[in-house]
Length: 223
Ligand code: DX5
Ligand code: ZN
Image 1 (cartoon, rainbow, N blue to C red):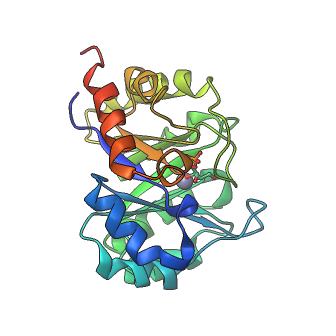
Image 2: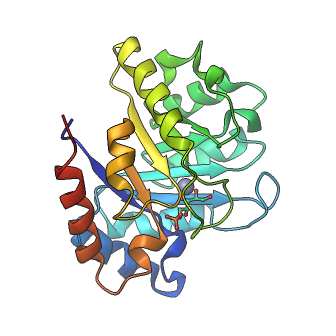
């Protein structure tokens, strides 16, 4: 698999200079902008909403990948679609009607995905694979940037990869949380093709150095 995508999470960017930050990280080689939405209800932190998505939209051409850590889910979907989101993912246990939420995302013109916390079972996928464009495996518990990678996520990536292959569908497999240069290759070998990294990229002075180093690691993945 050579179609790897790096998705910097702006959670660790300098919010006072967000337009410049997203332009710089795309110039450094980012394929996607990962946009973490937290509501101080589903997760114990509060971040950014559709207005900020709308504000950064004109600054970059790459897809904006909105990761909703909110409950309830549906209320915000049309707002993010209007604000320029391209991909919207949510946590299945935060929606009372998963199939409806997925359909609402697609009806809004976006790609749809489900997110799995370290303790969330994968069975939520069983009857909705035909409505999914992305599966996101959390390798930390959601709510904060800068946490350590939870190794159990590698097993879940393998399970998700198997389910995707069996479905025969073009579903992306994203991993989020604690991704660094030294573990990105293991995540790819377990099946991930899309890599969220917040503190690893925005925590360093030269974003291109980090993204290049991540791509060099991905180039070593056994095929
Ligand atoms: C955690 C967020 C992540 C986070 C990743 O709830 O979903 O996207 O920002 O940050 P790092 O890469 O620092 O773990
Ligand atoms: Zn995220």
